[in-house]
Amino acid sequence: MFGSDFMTITDEDGTEYELEVLTTVEYGGYSYLAVIPAGNEEETLPAVSILKSEEDEDGEPLLCEVTDEEELQAVNDLIMAELYPEE
Image (cartoon, rainbow, N blue to C red):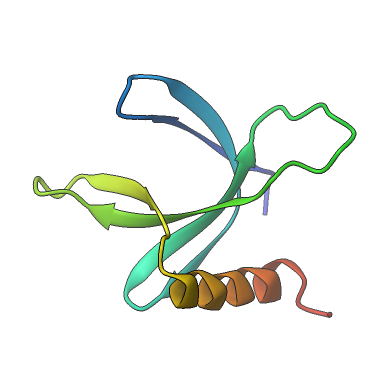
């Protein structure tokens, strides 16, 4: 509503990445985020990644790659409907 949301994530090797969150959708009791690298100044469109929000054993949020093709397709359809509702 007031602009883009940004987040910084750290991978298992300690490398930090700043991401722009395009949208968040709910599916099957989980939240999914559509993200792109922040500060993309290239003329080509950045690749959109879909991350699943889960909780680790301590209840802390953990973002994971979606590996199930059916789940990925269903979430992608929801994200596309959210980003492009008139199409």
